[in-house]
Picture 1 (tube, rainbow, N blue to C red):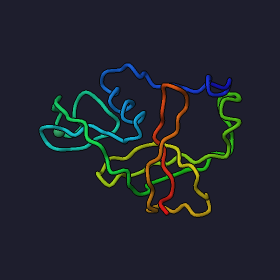
Picture 2 (picture 1 turned 30 degrees about the horizontal axis):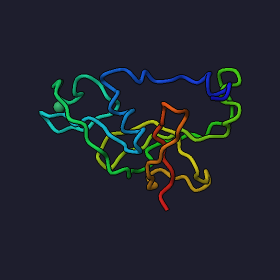
Picture 3 (picture 1 turned 180 degrees about the vertical axis):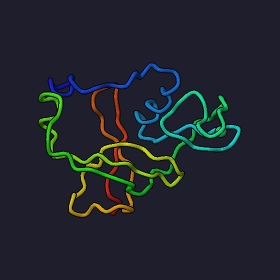
Picture 4 (picture 1 turned 120 degrees about the vertical axis):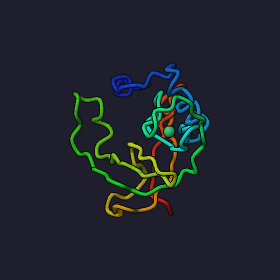
Length: 140
Ligand SMILES: [Zn+2]
């Protein structure tokens, strides 16, 4: 892990509510909880369904496709030098085909081609030996 990577925030991989999300990402899959009562697929993972407050859910692998719902291109490295080696980078809100919206980096994509509604595909970035982050890129 580079010194800059060590300064970036990390999720709690041992958190029981979200652990299946991180374990799936490690396998190269995007998985989200689906409410057993109303069928809502939701992100971020949480203990209770935001649609009906049911506490029972089943993890479902997403298809990986979606549309660019919003994005910003970041040119200033905030928080000391932690992101200095990353700028410019794109942070996006992606609306998955299954409905939920995820905040993630958009990588390997020409910023000049970004348009709201553009098709994107999930991809995965290994930050280190334990943490893999879902990200997106423009669909071909
Ligand atoms: Zn529900």
